[in-house]
Amino acid sequence: IMLKIQNVFSILIASSFGFLALLVYIISFHRVRNSADFSSILRISRLGNVVLTQNSSRHWDLIRDRCHLHENNMVSCLPNVLFIGASKSGTTSLVYTLSQLRNVYFIKRRIHQKDKHKEVHRFDRNTFGWAIRSIELADELASAPLFPLADLQQFNPAVIHYTPHYLYAPTVPFEMRRFYPHPEQLKFIVMLRDPVERAISSYWFQNSHIFKGVNKGSKADFLASAKLEILLRKKYEDCMDAGLAKLNR
Image 1 (cartoon, rainbow, N blue to C red):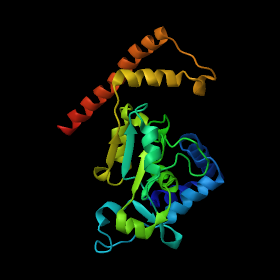
Image 2: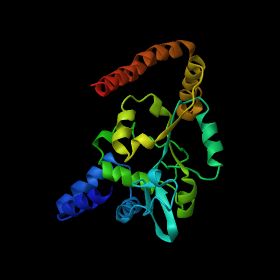
Image 3: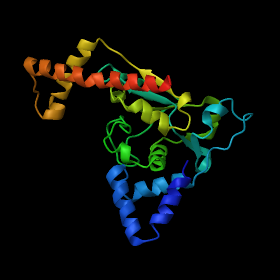
Image 4: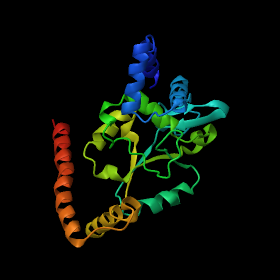
């Protein structure tokens, strides 16, 4: 997965201009923000995949090409579960409950910077289309928690990438399929709620003191926002229709 990173770095670092161009590009379109982030990505790129035989783990087919071996027999893995929504449907409560369980881990939004939110927002951010896939994969692996190799062999723990907005972002399913080594093995968690109750809850949340400093919002504004949202959400239907048309060719 990571050989492309070393190739790109070695070519561009050969000149000071190339190094500066690479630095500006990465900072502009990736979440790498400091020397510690760069160090983590380079370290991940030098790690090898977990070397297992089919006889050494009953989960071998689900592990290969997804997990990397660190020192002291610790591993980090790309996610095997995507928790994609829906927002304001109880997802935060379920995340808290799952995080209390053994052999359940969550991908972080940042490699080092502490972030109170567990939502990753990798595939729905505006700059993802310009990002280098190998660097994004290294970022995801560097943001993944470490756990013992023995647990991986015995249990194949759930490594969850959580972003409830993915359910509404029309390009995300296609980005995920291109991004992960074995997209056909991914599992998905979706929570649903009465759509009217969810819309009202989302509106008041977005207009609460958390985002606005003071509680705002009105019935008239909610109705106008709901009509606009209905039009915007139709993009998901259009996107899925286009995707199904490609699959049927």
